[in-house]
Length: 376
Image 1 (cartoon, one colour):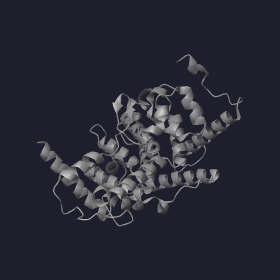
Image 2 (cartoon, helix red, strand yellow):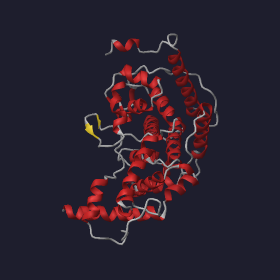
Image 3 (cartoon, one colour):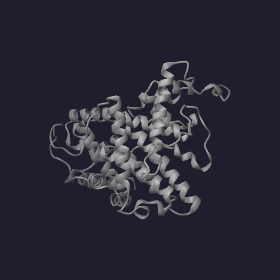
Image 4 (spheres, rainbow, N blue to C red):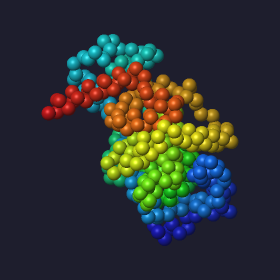
């Protein structure tokens, strides 16, 4: 395999398509360099990174193995929960009658008629695929789950390096998602970032933003541990991680927030890097978010990419957001409150949750307590 990879750098003079993809990656890396530079000095930077998909070995402590490790999806095992509801006595939170999809319902599998619940599941699955929330069935020998979306990246989870490279050159978003799950490809961080940014431009935010969040948090920890202080470079990585997180929140995608909260809530994550201690309420998250948003909008305008606005999202997207937000409150309550305290007002407001979110927090909390009691 190593002998084959010596010829992997693209021959830009051989094919127009190869030259085009190098130009795309070059553009992405230039823009990333702008986002990577200090926000007060928003200029083009000299490119010293690779612009092809040639693999590179990890570079010391800057690329620890867990950069590639995926957090499990939010725990919404509908089969177990539906069985738990069926086995449970009626509660004050359950509706005595079922509702139609067009009605003002809250909890899908307790409120909706069976056929409407099935429709919700299909619409939610379509929404997941459209935003790149795709999980492999098996990752590094570990069963992740039986997700409908797994089939879309299955061919690329075992594909050769050359096949993956060619499909990424063809702008295949499913190959890009699969590449971010595959540490065996040994893609250097700049190539990973370029792939993730391309996915975000195409509207596939979930895996891409989550991957970027992890990279930036790892970089922040590396900077902090070298000096034992939250210096400007460490802050810079924290701001980028939070900009990616907030962009997801504002576009009804909570996977980057899950990734962020899952990382900062671990026992070995430095307390000094947690947002409440590192940044405070008077911070520059909005500034970094504005840069990110402006670049994404400009890239989409250049390609004439017309993506749905938040007002045009399917109903399932907003209900899925509420369900996942309820899970974040149950699983990361204190960390979520700390995060809300430093985010821009619009994102913080979205995380406060509606009456439906509060109802789901109570419902899922009660359901899990009953399940634990039955298991004793």
